Image 1 (cartoon, rainbow, N blue to C red):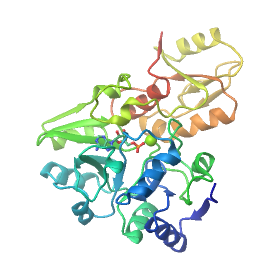
Image 2 (image 1 turned 30 degrees about the horizontal axis):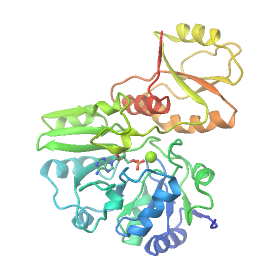
Image 3 (image 1 turned 180 degrees about the vertical axis):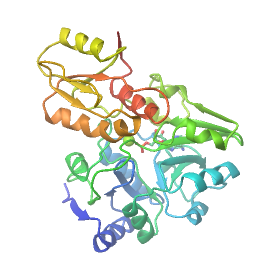
Length: 339
Ligand code: AMP
Ligand code: MG
């Protein structure tokens, strides 16, 4: 076990973090989506230690974070025009593009694939850290594999204390769910591998076709060949059992939950829902934007409150809401109660 340093978002501390990265150590840092667990994407041993610290399957590729377009040169062999247009519109921001990788990026980083996911985060601490270190930073979410992604430095410490060199505390993440991941089937087709804040609707003006991978909506077998390996794994789950309930309205949801009353029961409601008598409730917002911001935070709070079974009001499947739907369904192993 090593001592994990808790660093602040100051120039002095970012410099310490940048040196740790250059020396091959692991540093967790805030981004606008969730906290990332970073290593120099070009150092094989460092990247391997990310997988060890997280307990992450080796075939689940990492996203490489950059601070300016010039860094793409050492990471990908080609930037198609459509990618350039998307970068102009959405970077820095929560969009990851899968492109053909250079030899400088080892296969550990890309999970054995000949492509690599790249993104330019907008959080100032993340951008400074990449600039100061001069490293393209490979970073998955900074949680133990399978747990909810961390949206505060405390969440990172809860999962990673003693396993990594340092965490930079940048407060609560703004977006709250991971980036939108896309690849290009051809020059005019955007294929959404993982939904995020940037929705299919946001991407439509940039391509003739935009479609969402079926792994976003359904459970994929562990031995299946999929475009985005990360989508196979059960993910994002708290210890409590998460049960999404597709109810026509709050009254139907409340009546169902009342009939299921048991030890350790909790509800996760929309902000506009009234209380349910005798059942402890938490809330996670009304809009997709709010729900994305609060979902993982509430998952961790539910565990802290001793929840054992959590009935959750179903988010919508359109726009940013699809990212919330996807994370919730993955946490629930794709089992839903439909009323
Ligand atoms: P995480 O690091 O936990 O945010 O997960 C990264 C996500 O991006 C996973 O779902 C990966 O499958 C996906 N991803 C990263 N790189 C690639 C790639 N080269 N091809 C397809 N999907 C990728
Ligand atoms: Mg993750």
